[in-house]
Image 1 (tube, rainbow, N blue to C red):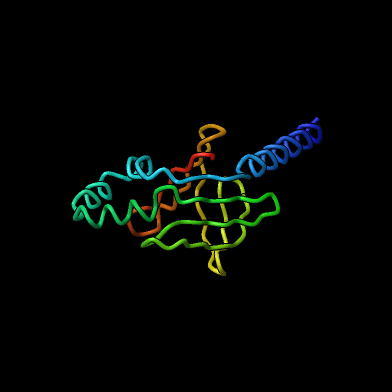
Image 2 (cartoon, one colour):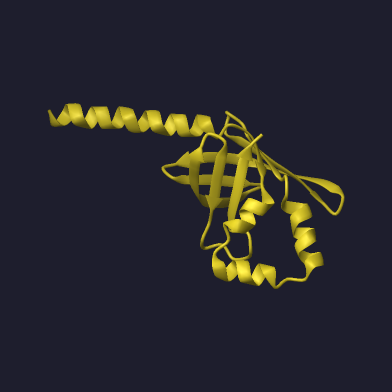
Length: 139
């Protein structure tokens, strides 16, 4: 009986991991306003204290940033910075509730939440800066 329970658990977990990996495949855009809403209070207060031109430049660079998760484990991130198209490429994998990215040789590990099929929230509470939690929506 224990072995049947163990085998069933493994099959269900494997199915959930495969489903989760399949469900993030596609084009995702960053929603800047939702990302700001997800900031912890202390970070939000520091962000609000920034000069408006700095906040506008951050929004221009971050808003509509596109994350393309390919089924083969590749990822491409595209954005505009100072009027120039930018791109970074790498790989991605899911391990439990962690999104593991390798972007141009640098490894990143994020907590991942998927409240629904069209929303992806990735966060790294240990990362410094203002934008350690990102709100993405499926394009």
